[in-house]
Amino acid sequence: MPENGNGSERERKIVVTDRKIIEITDVTGVLSFDEEEIVLETGAGKLSVDGEGLRITVLSLDSGRVSAVGKINGIVYIGEKQEKRGGVFGRRG
Image 1: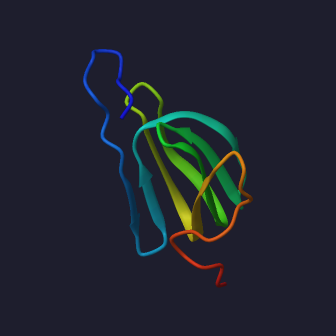
Image 2: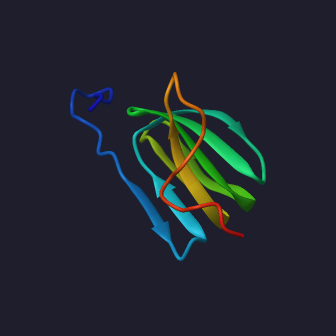
């Protein structure tokens, strides 16, 4: 895992509650966001959160935390050589 500024490793975690709230740690940057998709850079690579009515409620790059609310439809790690497919949740409305 990557290190934070004081030499200790950051915890990497994704927590989804009732498909309405998502909390992500080990975030190093926000690449893009709108009401349907949030794309983050994490210690494990790019992460896409797909949904409806998405709104970022917590953004702290110092601590590596991002939280968002809305309807969570899917979560996908995006590799360099793969397209966005699959994920924790299937694309069901």
